[in-house]
Length: 231
Image (cartoon, rainbow, N blue to C red):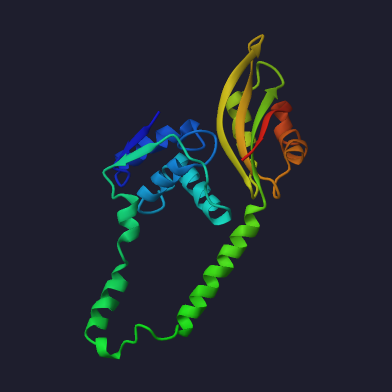
């Protein structure tokens, strides 16, 4: 089902998006897709940290774009009240416009078919190096993992348990949506989604060295892997 957002340049629009991302890692589905790119492009600048969920999502998409890009098709998303992505890309920077105006005054001195300048050659080399580096990084895959985190008993404060779990931060690890699931006798378990960069994060080490180690094991009895999917 298509999703629509309105005026993401306004506080009201950002608040709506922030509420929407409260229980989601991505705009649609369980992996980054073209829907995330559409909304990302509609934001004229990085969101303020007061929009916690939007800021988390925005930084994650920025990281994906630097590491390997986004390939998911998505379900379809529309952003009203902002310039289309194609227009934003097609509009040249103001500095380039000024340069063009200055060049018009001196057309006779411009050799349109001349050799590349040193700056142009350097820029081309940098682009080629960036593409090569991106290709290497793409070899490092990512995975989406669903975890079941069980407390000691029904007296465990599940809010503090989740705060302790999410306090674990490391490069290549992104905490996603979560929910509490009843398991019986008044006990609930925390079911939470994570996205990892395979070369940077080992799920086994995450569980053994962090989630079931001090001080988090004060709240957590055990952690199980429910689903493990390559992205």
